[in-house]
Image 1: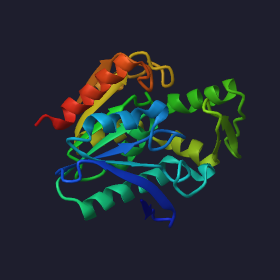
Image 2 (image 1 turned 60 degrees about the vertical axis):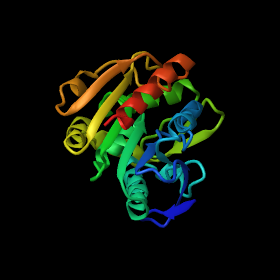
Image 3 (image 1 turned 30 degrees about the horizontal axis):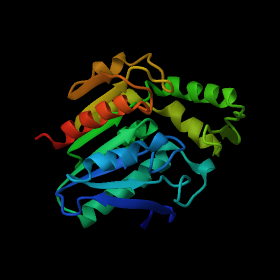
Image 4 (image 1 turned 120 degrees about the horizontal axis):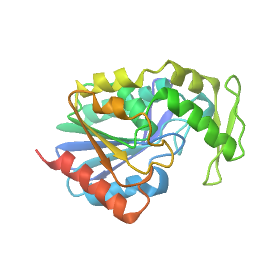
Length: 247
């Protein structure tokens, strides 16, 4: 299915699960991936939750099957994409809305801080904006890419794809206060953070500030950034299922 964002670009999305459910879960992917997330994380969510929830997966513009250019991607633009999907749900379905955001999708969700979301999960969030920018750049260089904050950054991905990053991406990260964004989000929704203890992408430093935020639950669980081991993924899925489906 397609829907236009405020710039007139088509966002590609799919609706799965229980079409009669009074609860809709929106899955928000991370940096440079798509509606499946890395290593098919989101399809595994759908398999487990489809009997209980209506589930929407989408590609941010510039990625996947959505229109737009990857060089134009930044968090501000992505908040507008996410808001477009939320508005679609509000206009077409009744009942509660939930969000599961993964990796950089966590920052996007926190920046938007949407109204009317009953429950939100931030899975494998980056620690701080100050940490994640240099971490991405280091990863790009190690994988043979080229960093140019004022021009076009070339990021070779492990999948064989090439992601191009424009200058606005780096500028938005530098201006982001992720802590205050999560503080505001926690005031607006029932919030759970699930932090993988063996995070091979975002690392394991500088997470203490999340633990100090009121009105959220912070849990550390086994797993790498994408919970690729079957036993770790199953624990993640069960944590998500319990949080979303328990009253």
